[in-house]
Structures are given as structure tokens and as C-alpha cells.
Length: 124
Image (cartoon, rainbow, N blue to C red; front, side):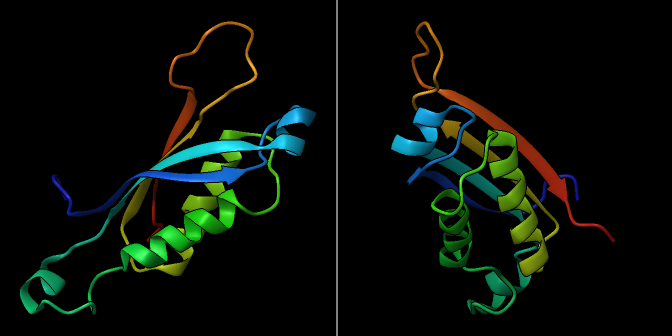
């Protein structure tokens, strides 16, 4: 699909304990997540029924479970776990996830944090 339909959640803010450095694992910090789920929304759009779509709340719960769950070392791993769970659990075509760490442990100034963005398509 050239311009796929999307379900978008922007600016999810949750507290987690991810990072390679011990202070990040002990004190934690805020993480910001933006997510786009590609899904054909024609059926739910025409019927005005939840069948044929994926609930925003369900997507949010997956993000919350991973961010607030066991500590991971890398933002890449956080994004990957979110993507895998959403792709495995819901009938979607693809997902794009951006995970941002608000206070990366870098000497110097970074105004709005450090982030990774990944895009995964469902196989088959």
C-alpha cells in the first residue's frame, strides 16, 4: 500500500530503567514513545465498529508493559521488543516505533534527548 492507513499514538511518556550504565538501571528516567501501526482501516471506518481495527488502549498497554518491564541495555532492544509484541499480537501490516530517552548519560548538552526509530513489517 503506497499510503497505508495508520493508527498513531504520539508522546507516550513512561518511566523505565533501561540503559547500559548502572545509574540508569537504578534511578531510571522518562522515556517518550511515538508509534504508528499500519492497518487497513476501511472496514472499521465504514462500519464504525471496533472489529477490523486495533484498540489504541491495547497498543498503549504493550508499550507500557515493555517500558515499565525488565531493564534492557539499549533503546534498540526496547523498540524491538515493542515491535515484536505488537506484530505477534495484532493483525497489522507494519509498525514504526520511536523511543526517546529524555536524559541520556552523555557529557555535553542534548536539548531533547537521544532516540532510535525502527520499522518492522509483518512477515507473510
